[in-house]
Amino acid sequence: QTVVTQEPSLTVSPGGTVTLTCASSTGAVTSGYYPNWFQQKPGQAPRALIYSTSNKHSWTPARFSGSLLGGKAALTLSGVQPEDEAEYYCLLYYGGAQLVFGGGTKLTVL
Amino acid sequence: QVQLQESGPGLVKPSQTLSLTCTVSGGSISSGGYYWSWIRQHPGKGLEWIGYIYYSGSTYYNPSLKSRVTISVDTSKNQFSLKLSSVTAADTAVYYCARALVTADEWFDYWGQGTLVTVSS
Image (cartoon, rainbow over all chains, first blue to last red; front, side):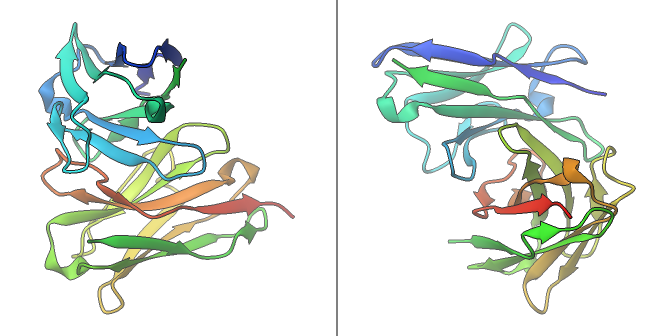
């Protein structure tokens, strides 16, 4: 069974920069996995942030960016705001209509 | 702007079938170009993809749930539905419907608000 791994939790100071990563048990994450990133705040549905590694939706704040880093997908927040405190999930596409979410990273802004 | 809304019973008895419907507004399912999807989230846990359907009726399911899942579409009502059979307490979760582009690069751009389904006698 394919497992997608994220950091369980990270803490960042307001105005700081933090990078969340997303690893696959099958090996290096490439653009062919079309990494997507979602933000979820308590009691809310997830909100799409990044698709296909680094593309932003029209509503995605400029401080969010996606990339590939060291064989993983990465989500970087630059100039973190208090409202960025949330759970972040990555999603990888394995082809054959197989989609796997990562376990999520709880980001604390402190 | 597309909106999705889940509906269905909030309480299902063990061994019965969970049935949910997602109503789409602001866009037509039959126009093509999108997969219509179900995702769930166990209480306090992460997200789990259940499956999705194309307007033509083609379906794709998570292998771990495939034997119990049926997703169908009713283009006349602009709705798609989820049926999960033989439920147990482990199926208690918030169930979301969402939309995804068929190009496979842009997943779940729009989501419903989610509906909590509890499996209990």
